[in-house]
Image 1 (cartoon, rainbow, N blue to C red):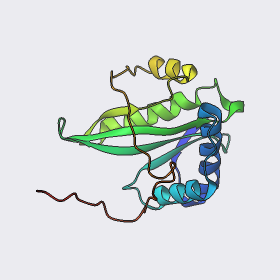
Image 2: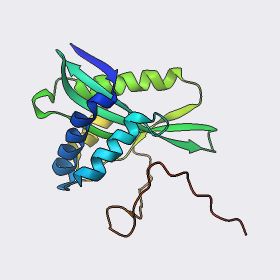
Image 3: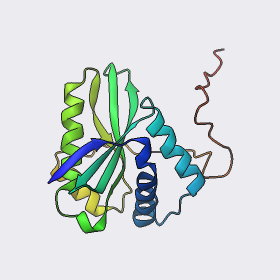
Image 4: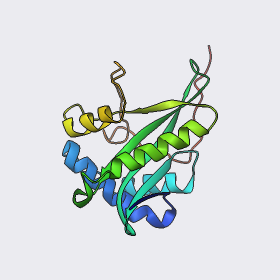
Length: 169
């Protein structure tokens, strides 16, 4: 039986390990352990940053996903972004991700002000594409662009710093 629970600070090591595995497997990218560990701990300590959900099978953590938030002025509500999805190889094909997704979707539907669910994935991850489509998600037509100041080495993130408001001219 698969059970879903919200992750706690004591889950930080396994969450970080899952993130390391996911990045390497899907993008052949090695994450900086210090940055990753601090980032995971920041989310687990502050639900305003996001929520990790874990799937357990017979008491063993089998998978995870992270929810972060994006305000939509068009919808006057938050999108819940699904990120950091990972299922241990031994548990794949057993409904672990489906159970995580369905639990998060149920939770989102019951909370006022949630506009919907979104996620992004690496374009080469065909397995993920099939899974998301089978769950009823549709390609939005949008593409993601970024300017990464942390991983590019051109800056650092200050995870607890307040957001900087640009000056208005």
